[in-house]
Image 1 (cartoon, rainbow, N blue to C red):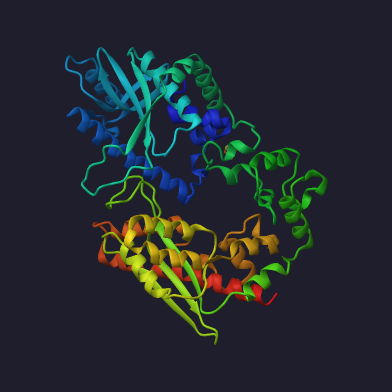
Image 2 (spheres, rainbow, N blue to C red; image 1 turned 135 degrees about the horizontal axis):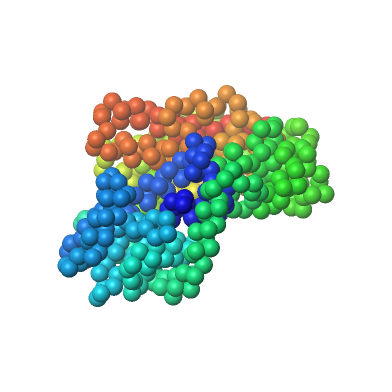
Length: 487
Ligand code: SF4
């Protein structure tokens, strides 16, 4: 009998082919930096959950994965069958060839209370299935449960800086929902077992490739070996999956009659033309920008477990900014801020920004993200609120006029800065940068740099990489504005 884990069954529920690939061709998996960051967040929240439930109960036993699954299961049963029962973390149980590790088990009378811990900030539909598989194995292994809950991060929790995290997690009782789902679990197990046995299943691409979890086998399944792969139409994966199922691989193959949304028709029209479409609106918008122009960009990080007083889980906190200042006579200055000393960087970041951006001239950004970060700074530092408000009022987002006026076939359905830039300034190539090429990598690099185990040499290397990356982002905006001013 094929042995299954809970996550394998969850994969099979998302897509049988995904479960098969995880078992037989896992080397094809390509996890994005966002997915890797989500794994890390899961580890951090799991660790704090153990601390919190231990604190609440005064004790508890953690079953290490490293001792091997057989030993983990044996130890779990010994603890659960013992006379003096205490909380068990990562209790390992199996039933009918399905193995689960239960995040938190709390003795409750002669039964157990099961708590599944997630790093997300809300209850998601798939979590009930996840808990039901766990409850099914728990019961099948011969144990009862009085309640099964899901503990997730409360994004309104404010850390006081005192090392105490009580309140970081909120529990949602899923017992009723899980009880209703229990009878479905054997069919899910069969589905997963069938999926991983035999040859690679034939399964169409579609919405399930990104939902509920982004699938790491995207490149294996979607057509990517063409000049304008179909996913470059953008939009719903459901619609794109239907087009792939009808045999289309390349945007150029798709007849207009198959498309019904304006963005799709626009992308098809421009891709067929083979040249960029530039409408006049963006040029007029850019020419109206006054001087001095401040091209501005933050780098931020957000952790599920906040470390600095006054901050919330996943709050976007800036540790770096870059600003190119363009004067009317053409002079281009560069200002920047980056703090890697391991202390809270936000206050110094805000003060340097207020000083560097002066009191007049548009603060040019790409998307509304910088506004959101400045609002976070206002919340953190009420004494800076008024001056930050003046900056907010000067912000000009150049993304909407560009999106309305510009598309190039090479952008493949994306209007991100990194998608547009190669089409207007190929010399500014992000792939030439070392170490840090996008926001999540910048955030990870920052966290590595402030880790006390990081050597001074490595920290200095990261500093240079972060400075170079952020400078690129604001220089890219300068080039973008100049490009559209000419059109
Ligand atoms: S990319 Fe889509 S079809 Fe392929 S394995 Fe993943 S979810 Fe399944």
